[in-house]
Length: 423
Image 1: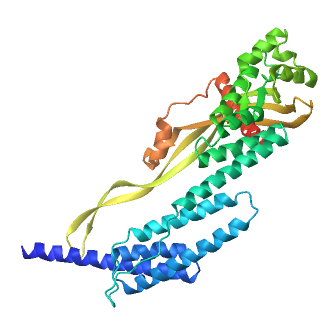
Image 2: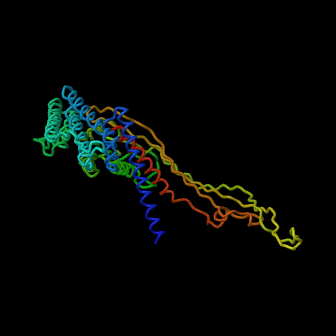
Image 3: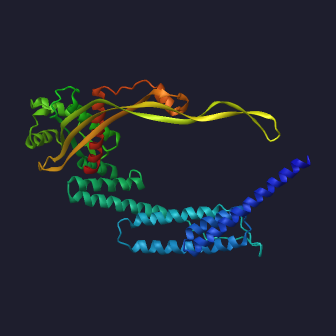
Protein backbone atom coordinates (compact mmCIF):
# COMPACT_ATOMS: atom_id res chain seq x y z
CA UNK A 1 0.00 0.00 0.00
CA UNK A 2 2.76 2.50 0.87
CA UNK A 3 4.50 1.69 -2.41
CA UNK A 4 1.35 2.48 -4.40
CA UNK A 5 0.96 5.77 -2.56
CA UNK A 6 4.59 6.58 -3.30
CA UNK A 7 4.17 5.83 -6.99
CA UNK A 8 1.01 7.96 -7.21
CA UNK A 9 2.79 10.82 -5.43
CA UNK A 10 5.77 10.59 -7.78
CA UNK A 11 3.45 10.63 -10.81
CA UNK A 12 1.66 13.72 -9.50
CA UNK A 13 4.96 15.47 -8.87
CA UNK A 14 6.15 14.54 -12.36
CA UNK A 15 2.96 15.94 -13.93
CA UNK A 16 3.28 19.16 -11.91
CA UNK A 17 6.93 19.50 -12.94
CA UNK A 18 5.99 18.92 -16.59
CA UNK A 19 3.20 21.53 -16.43
CA UNK A 20 5.52 24.05 -14.79
CA UNK A 21 8.14 23.38 -17.44
CA UNK A 22 5.63 23.92 -20.28
CA UNK A 23 4.27 27.02 -18.60
CA UNK A 24 7.77 28.51 -18.43
CA UNK A 25 8.55 27.51 -22.01
CA UNK A 26 5.41 29.16 -23.39
CA UNK A 27 6.03 32.33 -21.35
CA UNK A 28 9.64 32.66 -22.53
CA UNK A 29 8.60 32.04 -26.13
CA UNK A 30 5.84 34.66 -25.88
CA UNK A 31 8.30 37.17 -24.45
CA UNK A 32 10.78 36.58 -27.30
CA UNK A 33 8.03 36.96 -29.91
CA UNK A 34 6.97 40.25 -28.30
CA UNK A 35 10.55 41.53 -28.29
CA UNK A 36 10.84 40.65 -32.00
CA UNK A 37 7.63 42.59 -32.74
CA UNK A 38 5.44 39.56 -33.39
CA UNK A 39 2.56 40.42 -31.07
CA UNK A 40 0.21 37.83 -32.61
CA UNK A 41 2.53 34.89 -31.86
CA UNK A 42 3.13 36.34 -28.39
CA UNK A 43 -0.64 36.37 -27.67
CA UNK A 44 -0.96 32.69 -28.60
CA UNK A 45 1.93 31.55 -26.39
CA UNK A 46 0.95 33.80 -23.48
CA UNK A 47 -2.54 32.23 -23.58
CA UNK A 48 -0.99 28.76 -23.60
CA UNK A 49 1.05 29.66 -20.53
CA UNK A 50 -1.99 31.01 -18.69
CA UNK A 51 -4.10 27.95 -19.46
CA UNK A 52 -1.55 25.94 -17.48
CA UNK A 53 -1.10 28.49 -14.70
CA UNK A 54 -3.80 31.24 -14.70
CA UNK A 55 -2.21 33.09 -11.72
CA UNK A 56 1.17 33.53 -13.42
CA UNK A 57 1.63 37.28 -12.85
CA UNK A 58 4.37 37.66 -15.47
CA UNK A 59 2.27 35.94 -18.13
CA UNK A 60 -0.78 38.04 -17.15
CA UNK A 61 1.17 41.28 -17.55
CA UNK A 62 2.69 40.10 -20.82
CA UNK A 63 -0.71 39.14 -22.27
CA UNK A 64 -2.15 42.57 -21.46
CA UNK A 65 0.77 44.23 -23.24
CA UNK A 66 0.82 41.98 -26.33
CA UNK A 67 -2.97 42.01 -26.72
CA UNK A 68 -3.00 45.82 -26.81
CA UNK A 69 -0.13 45.71 -29.29
CA UNK A 70 -1.99 43.19 -31.47
CA UNK A 71 -5.05 45.47 -31.51
CA UNK A 72 -2.89 48.45 -32.48
CA UNK A 73 -1.12 46.50 -35.25
CA UNK A 74 -4.45 45.37 -36.64
CA UNK A 75 -5.85 48.91 -36.75
CA UNK A 76 -2.72 50.26 -38.48
CA UNK A 77 -2.69 47.51 -41.13
CA UNK A 78 -6.42 47.81 -41.87
CA UNK A 79 -6.18 51.61 -42.16
CA UNK A 80 -3.28 51.29 -44.62
CA UNK A 81 -5.15 48.69 -46.70
CA UNK A 82 -8.28 50.84 -46.86
CA UNK A 83 -6.20 53.56 -48.53
CA UNK A 84 -4.46 51.09 -50.84
CA UNK A 85 -5.23 50.79 -54.55
CA UNK A 86 -4.31 47.10 -54.50
CA UNK A 87 -7.07 45.05 -56.13
CA UNK A 88 -6.81 42.47 -53.35
CA UNK A 89 -6.95 45.05 -50.53
CA UNK A 90 -10.41 43.99 -49.30
CA UNK A 91 -9.36 40.35 -49.28
CA UNK A 92 -6.31 41.29 -47.21
CA UNK A 93 -8.55 43.30 -44.83
CA UNK A 94 -10.77 40.25 -44.45
CA UNK A 95 -7.70 38.15 -43.61
CA UNK A 96 -6.66 40.73 -40.99
CA UNK A 97 -10.11 40.64 -39.35
CA UNK A 98 -10.16 36.84 -39.38
CA UNK A 99 -6.70 36.69 -37.82
CA UNK A 100 -7.68 39.09 -35.01
CA UNK A 101 -10.92 37.16 -34.44
CA UNK A 102 -8.91 33.96 -34.03
CA UNK A 103 -6.66 35.68 -31.47
CA UNK A 104 -9.74 37.04 -29.69
CA UNK A 105 -11.08 33.50 -29.34
CA UNK A 106 -7.80 32.51 -27.66
CA UNK A 107 -8.22 35.29 -25.10
CA UNK A 108 -11.97 34.77 -24.56
CA UNK A 109 -11.62 31.05 -23.85
CA UNK A 110 -9.04 31.54 -21.08
CA UNK A 111 -10.01 30.56 -17.53
CA UNK A 112 -10.78 33.56 -15.23
CA UNK A 113 -7.55 35.52 -14.73
CA UNK A 114 -7.22 37.02 -11.24
CA UNK A 115 -4.23 39.16 -10.31
CA UNK A 116 -2.35 37.49 -7.41
CA UNK A 117 -1.36 41.00 -6.24
CA UNK A 118 -4.67 42.94 -6.30
CA UNK A 119 -7.14 40.08 -6.32
CA UNK A 120 -9.05 41.78 -9.15
CA UNK A 121 -10.10 39.92 -12.29
CA UNK A 122 -8.31 40.97 -15.49
CA UNK A 123 -10.42 42.18 -18.41
CA UNK A 124 -9.48 42.61 -22.06
CA UNK A 125 -10.91 44.84 -24.75
CA UNK A 126 -12.15 42.28 -27.30
CA UNK A 127 -13.91 43.96 -30.23
CA UNK A 128 -16.87 42.36 -32.01
CA UNK A 129 -15.64 41.96 -35.60
CA UNK A 130 -18.72 40.24 -37.05
CA UNK A 131 -19.90 43.32 -38.98
CA UNK A 132 -16.36 44.17 -40.17
CA UNK A 133 -15.86 40.59 -41.38
CA UNK A 134 -19.22 40.61 -43.19
CA UNK A 135 -18.49 43.95 -44.86
CA UNK A 136 -14.92 43.11 -45.91
CA UNK A 137 -16.06 39.73 -47.28
CA UNK A 138 -18.75 41.45 -49.37
CA UNK A 139 -16.30 44.09 -50.60
CA UNK A 140 -13.68 41.44 -51.45
CA UNK A 141 -16.26 39.42 -53.40
CA UNK A 142 -17.40 42.56 -55.22
CA UNK A 143 -13.80 43.46 -56.08
CA UNK A 144 -13.29 40.05 -57.73
CA UNK A 145 -16.67 40.28 -59.43
CA UNK A 146 -15.86 43.68 -60.95
CA UNK A 147 -12.41 42.48 -62.02
CA UNK A 148 -14.10 39.57 -63.79
CA UNK A 149 -16.43 41.96 -65.62
CA UNK A 150 -13.47 44.12 -66.71
CA UNK A 151 -11.62 41.09 -68.12
CA UNK A 152 -14.78 39.84 -69.79
CA UNK A 153 -15.30 43.16 -71.59
CA UNK A 154 -11.63 43.42 -72.52
CA UNK A 155 -11.44 40.53 -75.00
CA UNK A 156 -12.77 37.09 -75.93
CA UNK A 157 -9.20 35.77 -76.11
CA UNK A 158 -8.70 32.51 -74.22
CA UNK A 159 -6.14 33.91 -71.75
CA UNK A 160 -8.28 36.96 -70.93
CA UNK A 161 -11.47 34.92 -70.49
CA UNK A 162 -9.56 32.52 -68.27
CA UNK A 163 -8.67 35.46 -66.00
CA UNK A 164 -12.32 36.55 -65.99
CA UNK A 165 -13.49 33.07 -65.03
CA UNK A 166 -10.98 32.89 -62.18
CA UNK A 167 -12.15 36.24 -60.82
CA UNK A 168 -15.81 35.14 -60.85
CA UNK A 169 -14.78 31.89 -59.14
CA UNK A 170 -12.86 33.84 -56.49
CA UNK A 171 -16.00 35.90 -55.78
CA UNK A 172 -18.01 32.70 -55.27
CA UNK A 173 -15.31 31.25 -53.05
CA UNK A 174 -15.88 34.21 -50.73
CA UNK A 175 -19.68 34.24 -50.94
CA UNK A 176 -21.52 31.28 -52.42
CA UNK A 177 -23.86 32.15 -55.31
CA UNK A 178 -22.66 35.76 -55.33
CA UNK A 179 -24.90 37.78 -57.67
CA UNK A 180 -24.75 36.19 -61.15
CA UNK A 181 -21.09 35.15 -60.78
CA UNK A 182 -21.91 31.50 -61.55
CA UNK A 183 -23.54 32.40 -64.87
CA UNK A 184 -20.68 34.74 -65.78
CA UNK A 185 -18.13 32.10 -64.75
CA UNK A 186 -19.79 29.48 -66.98
CA UNK A 187 -19.81 31.89 -69.94
CA UNK A 188 -16.17 32.91 -69.44
CA UNK A 189 -15.02 29.34 -68.91
CA UNK A 190 -16.68 28.26 -72.14
CA UNK A 191 -14.67 30.89 -74.02
CA UNK A 192 -11.51 30.08 -72.03
CA UNK A 193 -11.37 26.37 -72.81
CA UNK A 194 -8.38 25.35 -74.91
CA UNK A 195 -9.21 22.33 -77.07
CA UNK A 196 -6.28 20.06 -77.81
CA UNK A 197 -6.18 17.20 -80.32
CA UNK A 198 -3.53 14.48 -80.19
CA UNK A 199 -3.19 12.81 -83.58
CA UNK A 200 -1.95 9.19 -83.77
CA UNK A 201 1.82 9.31 -84.28
CA UNK A 202 3.07 8.28 -87.70
CA UNK A 203 5.17 5.10 -87.70
CA UNK A 204 8.36 5.65 -89.72
CA UNK A 205 10.29 2.86 -88.02
CA UNK A 206 9.77 0.26 -90.77
CA UNK A 207 8.74 -2.22 -88.09
CA UNK A 208 5.80 -3.28 -90.32
CA UNK A 209 3.38 -3.72 -87.40
CA UNK A 210 5.75 -6.21 -85.78
CA UNK A 211 4.92 -4.70 -82.40
CA UNK A 212 1.29 -3.88 -83.07
CA UNK A 213 -0.29 -0.51 -83.86
CA UNK A 214 2.44 1.44 -82.04
CA UNK A 215 1.45 4.78 -83.57
CA UNK A 216 -2.09 4.58 -82.15
CA UNK A 217 -0.79 3.14 -78.88
CA UNK A 218 1.59 6.06 -78.50
CA UNK A 219 -1.13 8.72 -78.77
CA UNK A 220 -3.48 6.71 -76.53
CA UNK A 221 -0.76 6.36 -73.89
CA UNK A 222 -0.09 10.12 -74.01
CA UNK A 223 -3.78 10.94 -73.55
CA UNK A 224 -4.01 8.50 -70.63
CA UNK A 225 -0.97 9.99 -68.91
CA UNK A 226 -2.26 13.54 -69.39
CA UNK A 227 -5.66 12.63 -67.94
CA UNK A 228 -4.08 10.80 -64.99
CA UNK A 229 -1.94 13.85 -64.27
CA UNK A 230 -4.99 16.14 -63.99
CA UNK A 231 -3.73 18.20 -66.90
CA UNK A 232 -7.21 18.20 -68.40
CA UNK A 233 -8.52 20.83 -66.00
CA UNK A 234 -11.45 23.24 -66.12
CA UNK A 235 -9.83 25.23 -68.95
CA UNK A 236 -8.41 22.36 -71.04
CA UNK A 237 -10.25 19.80 -73.14
CA UNK A 238 -8.64 16.83 -74.85
CA UNK A 239 -10.59 15.97 -78.01
CA UNK A 240 -11.82 12.38 -77.90
CA UNK A 241 -10.19 9.84 -80.17
CA UNK A 242 -13.63 8.75 -81.43
CA UNK A 243 -14.39 12.31 -82.56
CA UNK A 244 -11.07 12.48 -84.40
CA UNK A 245 -11.63 9.11 -86.09
CA UNK A 246 -15.08 10.25 -87.22
CA UNK A 247 -13.65 13.38 -88.86
CA UNK A 248 -10.84 11.41 -90.50
CA UNK A 249 -13.35 8.89 -91.87
CA UNK A 250 -15.61 11.67 -93.14
CA UNK A 251 -12.67 13.27 -94.94
CA UNK A 252 -11.59 9.82 -96.18
CA UNK A 253 -8.19 10.45 -94.65
CA UNK A 254 -6.27 8.16 -92.36
CA UNK A 255 -3.90 9.51 -89.72
CA UNK A 256 -1.07 8.41 -91.98
CA UNK A 257 -2.45 10.79 -94.61
CA UNK A 258 -1.53 13.82 -92.53
CA UNK A 259 1.62 14.29 -94.56
CA UNK A 260 2.23 17.96 -93.90
CA UNK A 261 1.38 20.86 -91.61
CA UNK A 262 -1.39 22.09 -93.90
CA UNK A 263 -3.36 18.83 -93.70
CA UNK A 264 -2.77 18.67 -89.94
CA UNK A 265 -3.99 22.27 -89.49
CA UNK A 266 -7.04 21.44 -91.64
CA UNK A 267 -7.86 18.53 -89.34
CA UNK A 268 -7.45 20.80 -86.31
CA UNK A 269 -9.89 23.32 -87.82
CA UNK A 270 -12.45 20.58 -88.53
CA UNK A 271 -12.14 19.37 -84.93
CA UNK A 272 -12.42 22.90 -83.53
CA UNK A 273 -9.02 22.47 -81.87
CA UNK A 274 -6.81 25.36 -80.79
CA UNK A 275 -3.64 23.29 -80.76
CA UNK A 276 -2.84 19.93 -82.29
CA UNK A 277 -0.13 17.48 -81.27
CA UNK A 278 1.55 15.39 -83.95
CA UNK A 279 4.52 13.09 -83.78
CA UNK A 280 6.53 10.34 -85.39
CA UNK A 281 8.08 7.11 -84.19
CA UNK A 282 11.32 7.18 -86.13
CA UNK A 283 13.09 4.05 -84.94
CA UNK A 284 12.39 0.94 -82.87
CA UNK A 285 15.46 -1.08 -81.91
CA UNK A 286 15.14 -4.29 -79.93
CA UNK A 287 18.49 -5.64 -78.71
CA UNK A 288 18.38 -9.43 -78.24
CA UNK A 289 19.48 -10.95 -74.96
CA UNK A 290 23.22 -11.16 -74.40
CA UNK A 291 24.96 -13.13 -71.67
CA UNK A 292 28.36 -12.35 -70.19
CA UNK A 293 30.18 -14.19 -67.42
CA UNK A 294 33.10 -13.72 -65.09
CA UNK A 295 34.79 -16.15 -62.68
CA UNK A 296 35.08 -14.94 -59.11
CA UNK A 297 36.56 -16.41 -55.97
CA UNK A 298 34.94 -16.39 -52.55
CA UNK A 299 37.06 -16.90 -49.42
CA UNK A 300 36.14 -17.53 -45.80
CA UNK A 301 37.61 -18.88 -42.57
CA UNK A 302 35.87 -22.16 -41.68
CA UNK A 303 36.30 -24.92 -39.10
CA UNK A 304 38.42 -27.77 -40.54
CA UNK A 305 38.83 -29.84 -37.39
CA UNK A 306 39.52 -29.88 -33.65
CA UNK A 307 42.65 -30.11 -31.49
CA UNK A 308 43.46 -30.70 -27.83
CA UNK A 309 45.38 -28.24 -25.65
CA UNK A 310 46.27 -27.67 -21.98
CA UNK A 311 44.62 -24.76 -20.21
CA UNK A 312 46.28 -22.63 -17.46
CA UNK A 313 45.40 -25.25 -14.84
CA UNK A 314 46.94 -28.03 -16.89
CA UNK A 315 43.64 -29.58 -17.83
CA UNK A 316 43.08 -30.99 -21.33
CA UNK A 317 40.63 -28.97 -23.39
CA UNK A 318 39.43 -29.11 -27.01
CA UNK A 319 39.15 -26.23 -29.49
CA UNK A 320 38.20 -25.70 -33.10
CA UNK A 321 40.84 -25.37 -35.78
CA UNK A 322 40.04 -22.82 -38.52
CA UNK A 323 41.58 -22.28 -41.93
CA UNK A 324 40.80 -20.18 -44.99
CA UNK A 325 39.05 -21.98 -47.81
CA UNK A 326 38.03 -20.74 -51.24
CA UNK A 327 35.46 -21.49 -53.90
CA UNK A 328 35.44 -20.39 -57.53
CA UNK A 329 32.07 -19.57 -59.06
CA UNK A 330 30.95 -18.12 -62.37
CA UNK A 331 28.69 -15.06 -62.28
CA UNK A 332 26.45 -14.73 -65.34
CA UNK A 333 24.77 -11.47 -66.39
CA UNK A 334 22.08 -11.38 -69.06
CA UNK A 335 20.97 -8.10 -70.65
CA UNK A 336 18.40 -7.00 -73.22
CA UNK A 337 16.84 -3.68 -74.20
CA UNK A 338 14.36 -1.90 -76.43
CA UNK A 339 14.99 1.64 -77.67
CA UNK A 340 12.52 4.00 -79.33
CA UNK A 341 13.44 7.26 -81.05
CA UNK A 342 10.78 9.76 -81.99
CA UNK A 343 9.70 13.38 -82.14
CA UNK A 344 6.61 15.46 -81.53
CA UNK A 345 5.34 18.90 -82.49
CA UNK A 346 2.75 21.31 -81.10
CA UNK A 347 0.97 23.28 -83.84
CA UNK A 348 -1.14 26.40 -83.36
CA UNK A 349 -4.19 25.71 -85.53
CA UNK A 350 -5.09 29.38 -86.08
CA UNK A 351 -1.66 30.40 -87.37
CA UNK A 352 -0.42 27.03 -88.62
CA UNK A 353 2.84 27.75 -86.80
CA UNK A 354 4.83 25.06 -84.97
CA UNK A 355 5.13 26.45 -81.47
CA UNK A 356 7.22 23.58 -80.16
CA UNK A 357 9.19 20.69 -81.66
CA UNK A 358 11.32 18.17 -79.84
CA UNK A 359 13.15 14.91 -80.57
CA UNK A 360 13.64 12.31 -77.87
CA UNK A 361 14.87 8.78 -77.27
CA UNK A 362 13.74 6.29 -74.65
CA UNK A 363 15.54 3.09 -73.69
CA UNK A 364 14.00 0.24 -71.71
CA UNK A 365 16.89 -1.83 -70.35
CA UNK A 366 16.57 -5.24 -68.66
CA UNK A 367 19.26 -7.04 -66.68
CA UNK A 368 19.45 -10.05 -64.38
CA UNK A 369 22.17 -12.30 -63.01
CA UNK A 370 22.76 -15.76 -61.56
CA UNK A 371 25.77 -17.91 -60.62
CA UNK A 372 27.11 -21.47 -60.80
CA UNK A 373 29.89 -23.21 -58.80
CA UNK A 374 33.08 -24.00 -60.74
CA UNK A 375 35.23 -25.65 -58.05
CA UNK A 376 36.38 -25.43 -54.46
CA UNK A 377 34.91 -25.54 -50.97
CA UNK A 378 31.33 -24.23 -51.04
CA UNK A 379 31.57 -23.33 -47.36
CA UNK A 380 33.38 -20.17 -48.54
CA UNK A 381 30.19 -18.92 -50.20
CA UNK A 382 28.12 -16.21 -48.52
CA UNK A 383 24.33 -16.49 -48.26
CA UNK A 384 23.83 -13.95 -51.05
CA UNK A 385 26.09 -15.88 -53.43
CA UNK A 386 24.31 -19.14 -52.52
CA UNK A 387 21.00 -17.54 -53.51
CA UNK A 388 22.52 -16.57 -56.86
CA UNK A 389 23.70 -20.16 -57.36
CA UNK A 390 20.31 -21.65 -56.46
CA UNK A 391 18.58 -19.24 -58.83
CA UNK A 392 17.33 -20.58 -62.17
CA UNK A 393 18.64 -18.96 -65.32
CA UNK A 394 16.45 -15.89 -65.95
CA UNK A 395 14.96 -14.91 -69.29
CA UNK A 396 14.07 -11.38 -70.43
CA UNK A 397 10.49 -10.31 -71.21
CA UNK A 398 9.20 -10.94 -74.70
CA UNK A 399 10.42 -8.52 -77.33
CA UNK A 400 6.96 -7.01 -77.71
CA UNK A 401 6.72 -6.39 -73.95
CA UNK A 402 10.08 -4.61 -73.97
CA UNK A 403 8.99 -2.35 -76.84
CA UNK A 404 5.63 -1.66 -75.17
CA UNK A 405 7.37 -0.64 -71.92
CA UNK A 406 9.68 1.70 -73.86
CA UNK A 407 6.65 3.14 -75.68
CA UNK A 408 4.91 3.83 -72.36
CA UNK A 409 8.04 5.46 -70.98
CA UNK A 410 8.31 7.75 -74.00
CA UNK A 411 4.61 8.66 -73.82
CA UNK A 412 5.06 9.59 -70.16
CA UNK A 413 7.98 11.87 -71.09
CA UNK A 414 5.93 13.51 -73.86
CA UNK A 415 2.95 14.00 -71.51
CA UNK A 416 5.16 15.68 -68.89
CA UNK A 417 6.61 18.02 -71.50
CA UNK A 418 3.16 18.86 -72.85
CA UNK A 419 1.92 19.77 -69.37
CA UNK A 420 4.56 22.49 -69.15
CA UNK A 421 4.20 23.62 -72.79
CA UNK A 422 0.41 23.86 -72.93
CA UNK A 423 -0.42 25.12 -69.43
